[in-house]
Length: 267
Image (cartoon, rainbow, N blue to C red; front, side, top):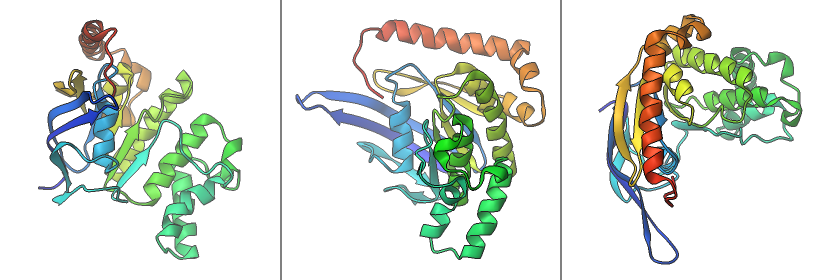
């Protein structure tokens, strides 16, 4: 089966005292190639655990993940990761960071230069190619992180709160860039976020997870990501349908947070 298949995945963590945390239970999803899915849920619902299983950083207690018919058994360049903090080599330049993966993969200097130049153009950072990363703003660093991920040409891009550390204006601009990259590259994207508005705007599909243990509570198919590729971000976010869905999901998550307040789940 093509695409990303999450088949009845469960995850149980054993604690030092012998106790257990049921982080995920019987999670099943299928993303066709080129789909963009946002994942929301209250703290402790297993969002990051699920992303780490897809990435191959964790092996599930039960169930399997397949990408294009191949079982995920560990990290692989077919699955690229973008973290909340860019996880960049801060002493390297923007260009060196973007070119790191291809260089490790044995690409020639000419191939690396061509790919790096193209991707820095894509994220509008060509003029900062020779700047050390530590001199760049948070938004610029996340654009470098996106370009570095794309340099490895993954089938799936996994994003763990990639815009969470940015100020509101930069975050909104970066949301537009994520949508542009999604449409231009045709990549499958799975994005974890705590922002309901961001999930609504970016998620062609949106999954709300419930805790204790983490499982799919409700799934949505939404039009706003496609609208956002060419449309005005602010105009989309004040549409009555956008606001109504936002309030529905906020209420849903608020009720779950009230139920688990004071609990000790992690995820």
